[in-house]
Length: 107
Image (cartoon, rainbow, N blue to C red; front, side, top):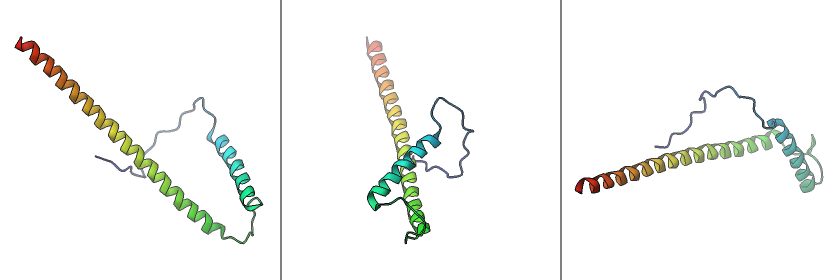
């Protein structure tokens, strides 16, 4: 059964590890996106550019929310498939052992 994650679910405290801090990846992505914007629009994003920044950000946030929920559901589907596959393999194993035992008992 597919369980949709509760958005208020408790998470463990983050643990330090050997990976780079996320901010480094984000800064790299911001630089790349700024260059894409400059290439596409001929300038970096600036205030008073004639667009409604709040509306642009809101629309982007809606898109982001959809992508995030898609990933959450796809991960849950994959976990469920793995769980079911494990049950299938276990069932096949039990049947195989049963068959061997039956053959042994026959004779």
